[in-house]
Amino acid sequence: MAKRQFTETSGPSQRMLRVGELIRHALSDVLSRGDLHDPDLGRSPITVSEVRCSPDLRHATVFVLPLLGENTDGVIAALERNRGELRRVVTRAVKLKFSPELHFQPDDSFDRMDETRRLLASDTVRRDVEQDEDETDEDETDGDEGGEDTGRRDA
Image (cartoon, rainbow, N blue to C red; front, top):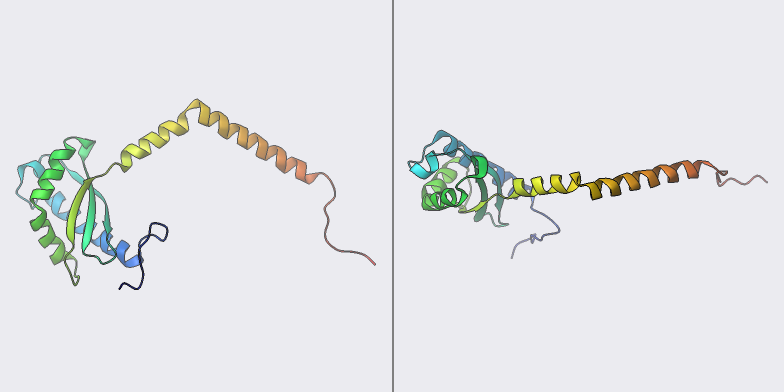
């Protein structure tokens, strides 16, 4: 049984984060140099944005996005075809007891970031934020009036 169980609220451990970052660097180096001889992987640069490891470090989910987000499904399929070679590269680059099984998923964090920016730029959100700021300013000025109780009592 594991000493520390990973839950959504506790987040990943330092070791999981460190190993994920090492795997990300190893995969990024291989993909940027073009060491894999797959025509689908050589067509456009691929960004490895994040690697999340399981608590036992035997599985790693790799989030990738091709440049401009074009042909994402084709790139994921090509990475899945070359999974064994990529796993060998990671094994050589990162010294672990077990070589992690790689799972590839498209990265949608950039899409979520654009959606968040669009929502924050909308008129209704801007109006609500301005109202909150006005209320905060009024509360600060109201608190200065009236005597402050220092808690001291003169005998």
